[in-house]
Length: 451
Ligand code: 5AD
Ligand code: SF4
Image (cartoon, rainbow, N blue to C red):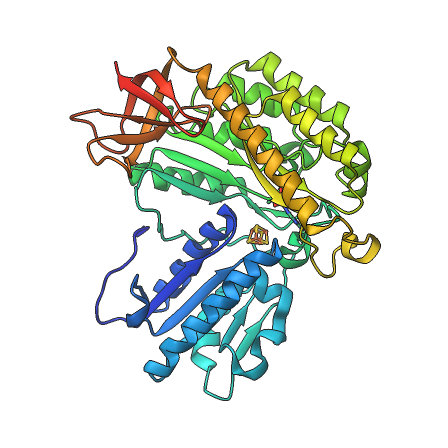
């Protein structure tokens, strides 16, 4: 199976720009696979492209604004060269639908479940006939498609294990852009992991909006259903030399079975991304998160009681509707109480059509949102530094992922608990596992030496 981009100069060229989450990165690889089968080849030079695709994100307004800016630049290519096709695919395509075709802005609009139809859509395009497919599906998982890998290192790859989301958090656009949740057949997931390992990959990251609700229903018998813990074990068994990561976990749904399965396999990495969003119970309820602060802290306690060395990262939203100073303080105190190893932090951005947009005014003034976000970021920098400082003097097994951006003589890789390490390792190469000792750190990186 060919999982590398084809570089045949005689083929028509597609250029793909990806925005948003890891899921989208993997979707771009699915899109490339479909287009390669239809005779296209990837180009990294937009000036050579016959088809320009932006795989887009709608999660916050600023994500969409950036993409609008890029669309203007894509249109310059069209002015320079006749016949260039501009396509918007992914979440923004699904959210805005025909609106993207107004004023002939683009030629092609395809939602996240419409990628199989891309070759047909492209074929049908003419200057006055743009094409659109934004149908969402209850079944599509692209299970049979081997994504063409666009990562640079050939060491770690994403595998989507499910699509869509049924959680309906009140602030979130994803259920509308990616549709209902569906789980991919475990056999096809394991096949993909084996294929990657046979091609030299050493790490897979299993992706889903809420991996803990993964459930593949066996057509014959419920006894043979596969849940996420079981899937994790199946992938871990592909090889002890294949590391397994996963994202994203949902605090309400992560089960003890998942935690114990992680603990049982050395090659399942000791890291859980567990978005908390807020430390205030009033906010959590308005966000429809289905857990409260106490439940979250208990989960963290459970994880650490089973795996004391497990890295825990999170997502936090500052300035959600009606957030008071006390609500904000509750977030700060929760972050302190957990001592997160790292976090992604955002200002609340109202998304049209979501429950929050319909029910609650976006009433925290922008300057207050910014101030709270800055406070949270400063706090997390300190927590990350504290967490990294605890690693100094410890030894870790690191998978080399590539050369350091700052110094070509050094490698970067991650520890099992997801900390980025920089070290010299003469004679080694990306894909090797090495033992290192941590010498010092910053809030973002461990500086280590080979042992
Ligand atoms: N505004 C700000 N942040 C958001 N997220 C999701 N929706 C919004 C929104 N409307 C954040 C959440 C989620 C992460 C992927 O993006 O923290 O976990
Ligand atoms: Fe990913 Fe959500 Fe952005 Fe879609 S809207 S690309 S699912 S982060």
